[in-house]
Length: 235
Length: 295
Ligand SMILES: Nc1ncnc2c1ncn2[C@@H]1O[C@H](COP(=O)(O)OP(=O)(O)O)[C@@H](O)[C@H]1O
Ligand SMILES: [Mg+2]
Image (cartoon, rainbow over all chains, first blue to last red; front, top):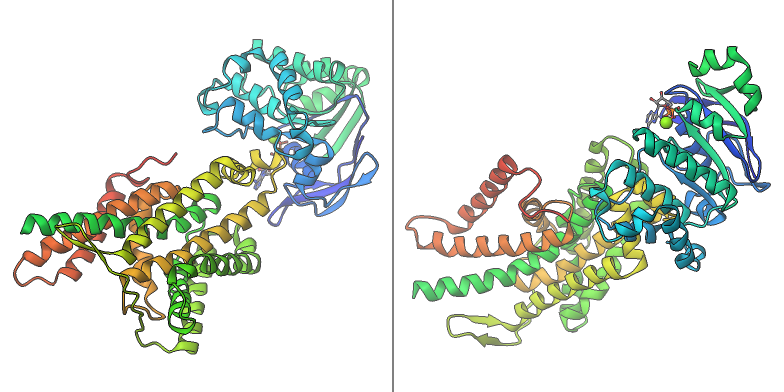
């Protein structure tokens, strides 16, 4: 579904990505783990081309989309739930969700998408007319995830969706991610700091450190190899 | 007698204020979306004034007809300027865009001077007065005021009721959030910059109705300064805040002018200018984010 080959990018003169390569197969949950500052968020931003790639390739459904503008990637079905929410604080919950259906393709399915996210997060239905900026942290995260679902994605990339949430909400977020896979049939690239919960949900795991991939494998393998988990994940 | 004069100045002040407000919306729009301060603001107003001269003196047409043309010219200049310079400078330190907009202003001023010379020009569009009892209101100024209100309303409708306008609002609220919704953020930047310049050039047409013989290549400087005061009054980033800031400013300017004129030995024009900047300083000291809370 998504194939990343030797991607390079950075900020100004500082290179952050040093040719990581990874693949996300259709219908899977692929976890990208690694310490703070490893370049995980930069990788996702570069895949969406909101940070410009310097080199390497991004293929989506077999097509080279390395330099395709972000809004066209969203149209093609690639979604990103960015780190740190980025919702529209002075719009209502409903208006935020409606913005997710901004593109024609998504607009055509707006009401069924709304039903879907209201089923996933009934709280959002109760709060639909509230200003998003006034919601609790957990509710804001639900809005951000839902807004991306409203774009009618096939691939969804989530950047630390459980960050800063209370334990009960963390398990709710991971439950939702599994539903995205099993009930909605999405392909998921999950960036997380929460190693245990990620290893419980993921099919395949990549471990990133200082801008490149240091280890990869099916989840069971990664769990078993103690030197990998202790070196890179502090488990 | 003084009361009547004051009443007259309140009305005239609000009418001028509506036009001042409209003339600041472009500045606030560009700042609100791109966080770019257009230091060359007044030069774009000047371009609108020269377009009006051309319409009235050369073509013999109604100056109001210059409004859509000025807007279109502003859109074109705005797009050109955005794509040649601003786009590349958005991630650079703020000084870069300040210098770029300053230079664009100088470039416009000197180009117009090269073509038309630097003497003061004007035109006389006399279409009568409306007698309000306490004051006589030139119909041309009334048109300028109505035009400003109409343009402000259109902008409001465009922002809140159209897809492109909603996309623009989402970019203002969170550009990264807008991007992941599929909004073409670069396109939205270009569009709001162009619309901001379009509004500013169009406002130059409306402002000429208040300065019968005050049109020259360097007329913009004063308007740039006033627009800064108004934008700060209105909360900087909101075009509607700017509109109300304009009303307040027009009112203060006109009323204080009348009051200062009553003082013996005072040059009211200079003192009014002084007062404007006192207001700016005071606001910046007590409420740096502006008086009217931006939405
Ligand atoms: N917008 C930015 N501008 C400059 N440097 C950045 C920016 N975002 C991240 N970085 C730097 O890039 C490196 C990787 O950061 P990031 O991709 O956020 O890592 P992670 O998501 O794995 O924590 C860090 O050194 C960080 O300081
Ligand atoms: Mg990160």
